[in-house]
Amino acid sequence: MAKCPKCNAKLRLIDWRPECPKCGVNMVYYGMEERLLADAEKAEAEHAKFQKGLDRFKASAIGGPRQIARIILSIIPVAGLFLDLIGVPLAKLSLQNIPFYSEPGAVSEINIGILKVVEFFTDYFDVDGLLAAIQSPVVGKSFIFFALAIVMLALSIVMGILNFGRNFCSSKKSSCAKNIVVSVLSAVLVIVSGVMFGQFASNINAIFPDIITGAMGAGVFITAALHIPVIVVNLLLVKNPMVVKYKELPDYSAEAEAEKVGEAVVAE
Image 1 (cartoon, helix red, strand yellow):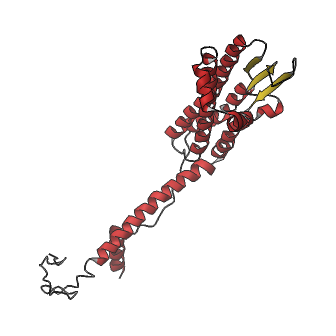
Image 2 (cartoon, rainbow, N blue to C red; image 1 turned 60 degrees about the vertical axis):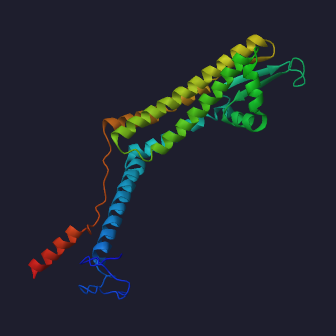
Image 3 (cartoon, one colour; image 1 turned 90 degrees about the vertical axis):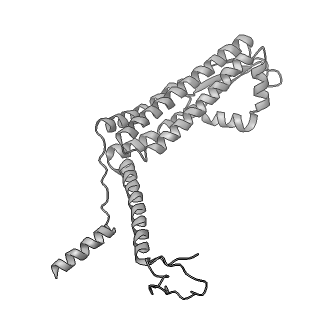
């Protein structure tokens, strides 16, 4: 059964008017001012939380020369994935004397970069074929290294993207330290990817010595080295943390409003 919000009197079915039959208070509007004030305080708290996040974002992205340099430098490692376009690949692969693929004695040199990897996945990649190759007693070990090389390269790219995104929201000393870990992981993973591909090439060459040869390229080390500048900038931010300038917001809380009323009364 409904009750009056002020006097807690029980209401009957015939008490259809908005006024309480006991105390006479308008039950529809009773406590509305307090509810509105509570809603305003909640909205103010949410806005303050959002504003603090926005202030930290600004400090991380454009808060100073080091932060701006960090954003720019975190993009540069992506260029290492395209070094094959200027003859400095992540890996090299040579194919010759392959039946139905090339003429006898003809050698096909393939410089591997991110574009070649994407082309391989879009045009030639076959999950069932790769699993069958891994299970093969002849080339199984070789293709395990090949699969690991692909996975490590993919993880390195994911870490690079994660690091780029983190640099926009890393205003604290601890966050900058985590960025260093992510950058190091990305650099290590690309090197491990190159090592795995080198193992694949070495093993497959032992099986088909006159058909397939390959090796890790210098682009792997250059791509890993491109992470060093952003690591250095994050180290500087760990040693000398950035200062976040928080925007001061007006206080509309009940206490603040009451204080204003009191000041107005005193002034009169």
